[in-house]
Image (cartoon, rainbow, N blue to C red):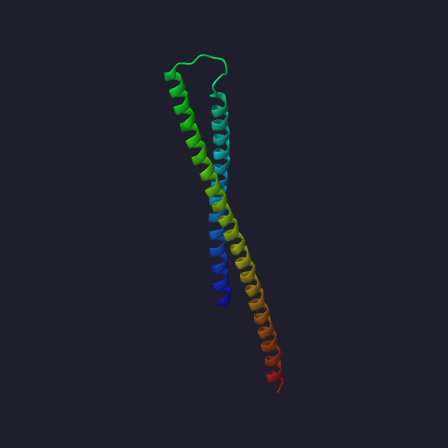
Length: 134
């Protein structure tokens, strides 16, 4: 009975760990994508600087400044999302380590139960022949 209980617990922890690892992989992909997007937005922001000595109309200045402001807003949003993803990734890593520790404890309990069962078998086997010899 106890062996089955620990086997079921072990399988549940393994399933939980697989889900966490899968979700962690998805978060890592999203983080890499955000880093790439952020660098591209920064490059676009650098490319949209006003050129010194060039005559620009007020409409062009307004258009470029609006474009730059939108880029800065998008950069800020992507940086905030990156910070949030890092926190979420840390949370998943902590959860995975907890599940690993729980799996280790379950394996220890399984080994302890097996050892106890073996001792009980040995005791029974040693008692039964003595009774038969009488």
